[in-house]
Length: 129
Image 1: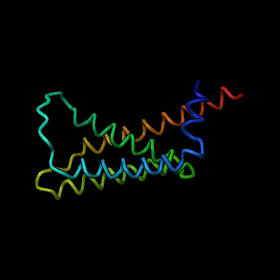
Image 2: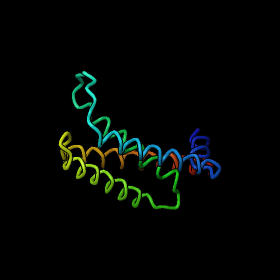
Image 3: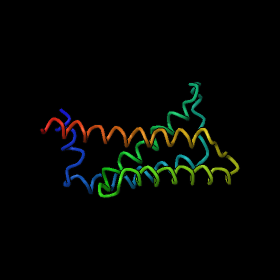
């Protein structure tokens, strides 16, 4: 099973699709994090943290698939710098604020995504042996 997932995720023929998805995802995340929040009137505690975890995790996950020659550690670093940049930009906006907690959740999502991808690669290589 891991081999099939790995073959799909890491196959070279999908690399351009992952690159387009990465840049679209990055643009969407930038838009969502820098525009005023829309009142959804949903009262779920820490829902914004879940959005940060998923949003930045997806950037790292898709980024690693889009640019497989970039080392995982660098993907983590670049994605984290992007998260910090977003938080700094938010601090300059009147309708947003800088949040250390959001940044830490960004990093948690990033690291989790990269770990999950490395786990898939590892399990796939084990099943091939």
